[in-house]
Image (cartoon, rainbow, N blue to C red):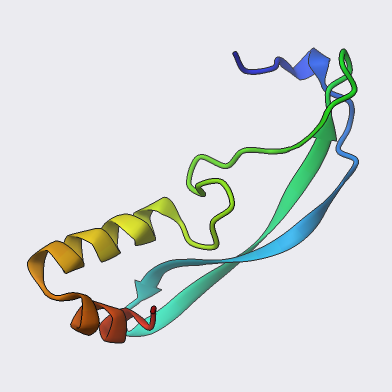
Length: 87
């Protein structure tokens, strides 16, 4: 069950994260985002905000992952990795 706004105190701090997204034409695209850490006012537990486009503990967006999976299904792993600069 998601916490409602009154259950939060203001963000404690955060950290900058660089994540990989879909390419812009032929150019690789990286996004720099600030991921905030919060604390539940009721229990005091710290947590990091969830972002719907970024799976937990990943450095790439969900749509980038879906693109890679689709390419692998229609090609081979080696060529897909070379085209997208991944290993």
